[in-house]
Length: 183
Image 1 (tube, one colour):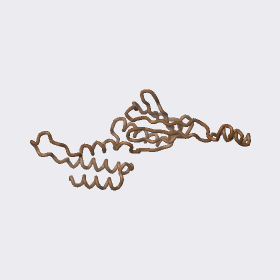
Image 2 (cartoon, helix red, strand yellow; image 1 turned 180 degrees about the vertical axis):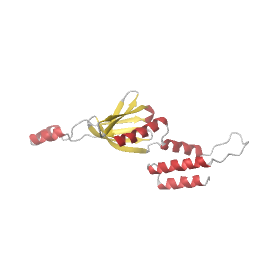
Image 3 (cartoon, helix red, strand yellow; image 1 turned 90 degrees about the vertical axis):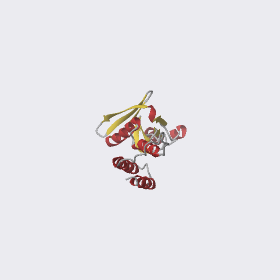
Image 4 (spheres, one colour; image 1 turned 30 degrees about the vertical axis):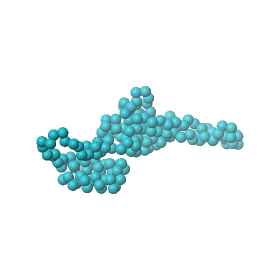
């Protein structure tokens, strides 16, 4: 299930807005070049001559991709009354995302779950692999059916994956029918 988009948000990184995407295996951000206020002011004052000479777009564009397996820590720090800084820390780098307090809670929770291998997208992938037929080493006892609480937990997890947009309605319905057939 690699390449599943789990969350997308806009953040303030080094003075510019950036689009940040959290996938089940990486965190990516892109900060596009934009028109700066200084360029607009200079363009107005010089009748557009400065824009012709230096170009319309300015600022520093940048992108980065951080694999989840290289993230060592996630930290949050309040930044005023409205924002929190979420720091994603790797062995050689740290990226700070400035977002609202609510967004910071969501981002930090998702990244922590990914680091620990506890995100629902990861456990669903594992449950699919565990549901695959396996060859018994010794056929001394018949296989036991999973207990109802396990099925109920999987149904709950399945519902969460659907709510997060990870599963389509058709995938949800098919897996739900399979799980209910085990009861």
